[in-house]
Length: 135
Length: 125
Image (cartoon, rainbow over the protein chains, first blue to last red):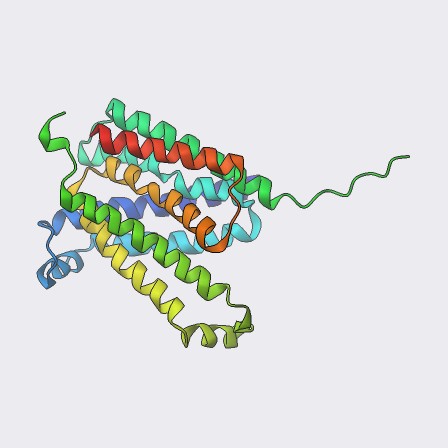
């Protein structure tokens, strides 16, 4: 069962990452940003926007399947930890830099997400185990 | 800090709009799903489809999709995803205000840390 969760979390992260990378490519290719039909046509006229849709839909169904079985805390955390994979991939794909500021911000955000994951978990696991009767 | 690294009004506006649309969408779905009179199964979906909440949620998400593309085309992706994490905070605060959801100590710590991280990235350029 552990392996099932792990695979599910990685799949979720993969779909989320695909979506964000695709969003970035789609947006970059549709520049300049303007509130116009021309911009919309540029966005939907290249394949990346559909990669983003695939990523979203895939993440949605993976999330739903995971929630049926996995504890919500780790699932919540995993669904937001794509910031890590997206940051690493943007260094490789978009020549971005992991500046001190970004790494510091990411550390705080990830710590926060882990806290929220634990918070969800303790809340949903709050159904008390039947206490063994004192003899 | 070089001027080129500061956040432009357009980027800030798109970021705020993304927060409003994301929270608005989630809350609309919550309102649609939480309707006790909706019944079950297909009848529940019909009930929801006949009311504005579900469609308000869908509308928010469609516009948010476009806003997010525009936002990410203007900032580095590694910075954009970090700034977008503020949505987690916005939805928890909104859930607290509108649905009276509990904010435990661990949740407050999580919210504070995420906010701190977003502030570091946003203000640090």
